[in-house]
Amino acid sequence: MLRFATLGSGSSGNATVVQGGDTCVLVDNGFTIKETVRRLAQAGLQPEDISAIVVTHEHGDHISGVGPFSRRYNTPVWMTHGTFGATRDKKIADLNLFHAHEPMQIGDLSLEPFPTPHDAAESCQFVFSCGAFRFATLTDLGCTTPYLQSLLTDLDALLLECNYDADMLRNGPYGESLQARIRGAWGHLDNVQAARFLEQIDTPRLRRVLLGHLSEKNNCPDVVMETIGHYAPKAVERARIMSQSEVSDWYELA
Image (cartoon, helix red, strand yellow):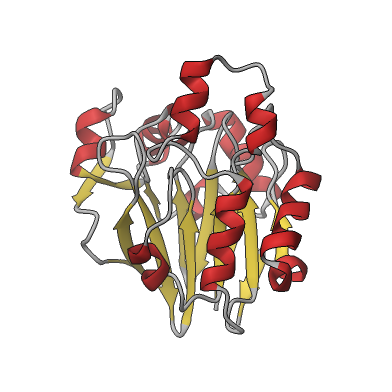
């Protein structure tokens, strides 16, 4: 059995819980200890249930809560060498460093990290496996590549970034320099890029698609689903929007 839920997904804080067997891993944590504990409780978990935290990169909305949580609950933390070098909070209770092409095992979960094009020191995402089931996270990247397509074709579930709508970004409140960063090859995926990638990797095996990291100012759920429906229509019924403010349901592969 493999199951997963997001505690929050967006620029104000990100955390995803992945559980396989007796192992429960937190992917990133951009929330305070108090908020993390509150959201874990909504998912039916206690802080002591978290076996480890794995970190994708050093941006604050993904890592600001990692050090405090690890120190409070003595939780092991895994991150790349580059991420640790770039992070400000180096007081980690139980630090484990890895390279982005280095598979690893945390309890009952097998993790396959892979590098992503993002404006961070050594950004990565993960494929999680437990038994025959495979779930991947894919957020915080400015473009997709043939390598990612080949790596993520054989999945049962995927958390996919749909960060912004191109027209909303262009006409929104952000200045040109910030817009350029977001649109760039080391920034974030827009809805069309995400939908086209989803269409490329979609197979009958892909049972669940979580659409996350939506910009609060440059995107909205209706626009995301309309875009997915246009470019990846077969995936619409399996797609769910992840919220910044609310803990998602658990999604189970069994």
